[in-house]
Length: 357
Image (cartoon, rainbow, N blue to C red; front, side, top):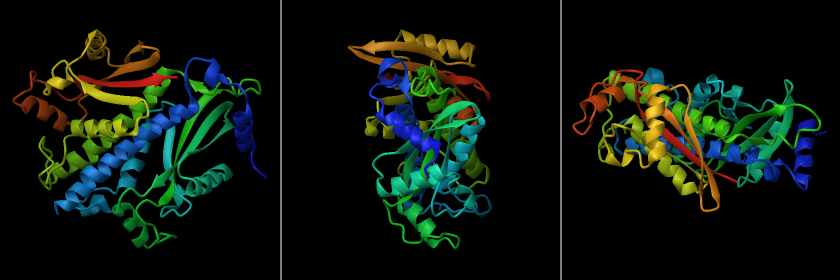
């Protein structure tokens, strides 16, 4: 017998009208799509432009026991570390990896709905499996997206691992799923359909949480660690060298990956003191936003705007120097207009922008 959560999603899908068309906000399904696109962009950037790039350069490998072997974390480990950091931010949204064939039993499905969802995305990986569930007096929207082996590194790791229950994965195989959990309104029987939208400010916070978590993992566990060990350095011109890209470049490459998906979301770095002139504020909103988050870095500077008939939401978050690598790069760069940054300074901003239906 299917659970109430699954029955609820069937009821929602059959409703002729819903808050998705009646209320202003971001439908929960679209919010999950945006969040997932950022998760995938970060992991794709790490897999292709860090792990595979350095493997081609015969510089360093990725391995499961990366801390003891002084190697790179595997792409799945990168995502897991990022999800733990993001989940610790307590913004409400949570995400994690799971699989029907987990190497780590902790990544097994935790409910019948999760098991059913994994089975469905294996059969039909072109769309997520979604449902709503009551928990702790609230409604939650949950979505499972296919976790696809985007490189041979992913499939080879599972196929060769002694604890893997499945050893015939190929590049492009669905290896498991990424579940995204979004809190909705307080639980009543009358408001289930009315609460399936989220405020744009909340969705922007979720997107930013993933971005910051990805960059924190990359900066602290990869760049800083390998530089401290004297194994490898990060540099601006990394593409043709045995080098890591800078943390800022990691975010920029993730942004380029998002652009290819055409999901209506984009983000970029801004600064009042840019090394690259392209990162200067382009309009009054960006100028005012950067000045605001520099003085008040607790909350983003936001704006609702229109381009023709299309509505957009924009938010500028403070770009804080979380590692000494960030500080040293800006203070030591010949094109930097400001050379006295210290740890935890606001160095600029991260602009998150997406379309409102």
